[in-house]
Image 1: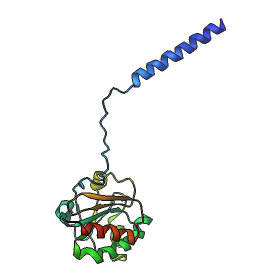
Image 2: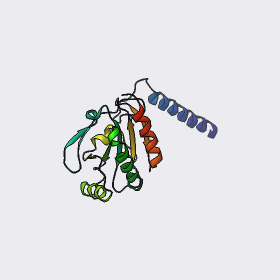
Image 3: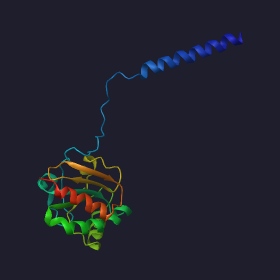
Image 4: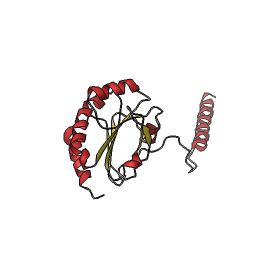
Length: 184
């Protein structure tokens, strides 16, 4: 009698397992997702327009076509972000007249405008600092880690993505020089 109850118990477990497999099997359809894929090397950099830190004038990425653009997502509280900014400033100073633009997109949804301004002033940053107060560019670029930097060629195509940091000045110079030598 005990053996028969055990067999029935195992049969029920087996039957429930088969029902579970049948109900959870893939149907070949994909469920819609709310998370877009992050922009990648070899693809056009998604366009955005954000206000500037000091003058509130919006800058759009598409308006910079024909120039080499570094799009750097950062926050003032982020140690690697803070560490790489002086090198970015030196590289910008050296190459801005050759067509380099750095857009430092402050993740203002995780930071504050006043802290970003204080950091920019303390470090004498002269490249455009944009405020992403609503997180539009952060979501568009699927930013999951700060800093994240996109190296964009003159044609608007992403040449490289660097997640994390700090990036060394040598790495920045090498990547920027390579992009500046490309034909527009």
